[in-house]
Length: 458
Image 1 (cartoon, rainbow, N blue to C red):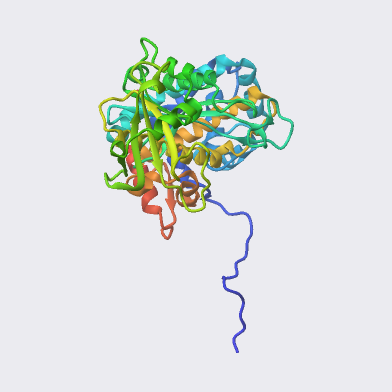
Image 2: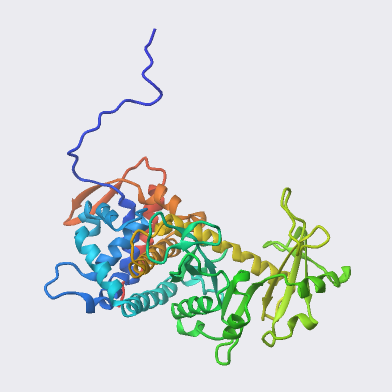
């Protein structure tokens, strides 16, 4: 009788291996940063904070931390995974040097934040030009989604407070550029706020929108070529007045709270005025209808605003709210777009739900918790998180095709970045030879070829 030894083969593990590179797929992120010019831009932006005769460049230090976060790290010390692979990532600063730089940038306050953001905006414009048809502005319009994120804290960090969900932590406000159905999205604003910050604070929405617009190419910073989408937290007079101010005139699609006046107006809508809602493929959405409100409910709001309401059969088990009517779940949003049917406008607003995917990706990329104590330090951490998310959005946009363009950070790490490779030197060039049996070797190699084919920064 043959003795069973288990379902997996037995192996012996020991150290001392040579010529093997872990996380070799991360070379895709490094090449993305190089082709985009992000390394050079950050180096130039942070030059004022480089000490004389310093060994490490502040721009590279910050980019190294962002790369570590993109690979799954959640604290400054995780930059050690890059330090272990100098053949791929070059010389990496020590943990104390990284911490000192974060402290220095935090002490510099808005000046350092402005420098980092200006570098990101400069590189973003170049990346969009390189991406061509895959860029989020290929259709002539940029869509920016603004949404809040709850980040829990497990210690008394600065500005941590009780949140509206009765948890404890912070309530940052983020903005993401939507890449549409065939892509992901990239962050363009991250505003650190206390845990007790309101969901509908107009001043915070204005600041987030201002930061987001500053990240876009000049032609999208005003006019109807930029669409701002929010949930009902953005449905305030002050925010809409800011969006429609003279000289700005941005497009918007903003959720609205169902007030008593709106609820009463919905009850007066005749059955013939309801239009079936639609899905992205233009097919009818089962059990959902839309209608446009007019009259007194628009008084006091910006000129040209349209108020569109949707009624939908609730999902099984869902509880109706007192603002719902006739067994139907009611939602409402405002927009100033006039050239499209209301069913298409409602679909466009419903697609704001993709912002929840962007938030999930951010949580998986350094936003699960804020690792530092001071608020100024954690604001720098938010900038690092955004740099990591930028790389995770730009690399697929420039190098991946088909369904792989929609892979979220967890899948990118599992399938691409975690691949091991052998480092060899051939004809005085260092070459990473990926494992032949790895299922996604061809995807990695093809993506790297596309990146290398791109022109180098001027």
